[in-house]
Length: 83
Image 1 (cartoon, rainbow, N blue to C red):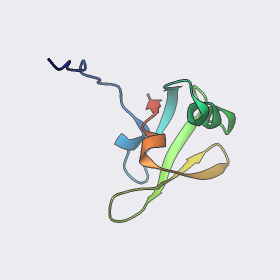
Image 2 (image 1 turned 120 degrees about the horizontal axis):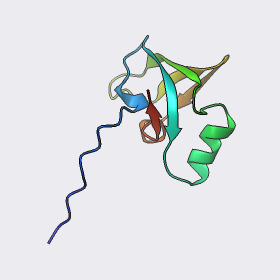
Image 3 (image 1 turned 30 degrees about the vertical axis):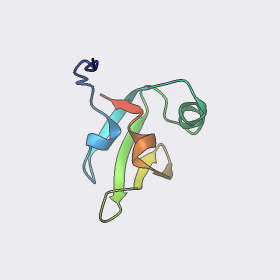
Image 4 (image 1 turned 180 degrees about the vertical axis):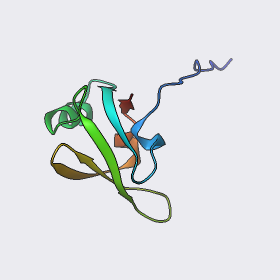
């Protein structure tokens, strides 16, 4: 018997298109990647923008948070819940 995960309707950083802006609501999980995202500025309330997306799979993403721009892999960006 397989368990079906409940529907997750939270918007993620990966839902944004190039040029779109949002605010960080929270960073999911509590592991080294999530802690590093918090350390570099992905904190609740921070303004973020997708600056660029690489072709063909939109991986990695160039993301501006505060005055810095970071390249994040999609699996890292998926941890950032946006408002």
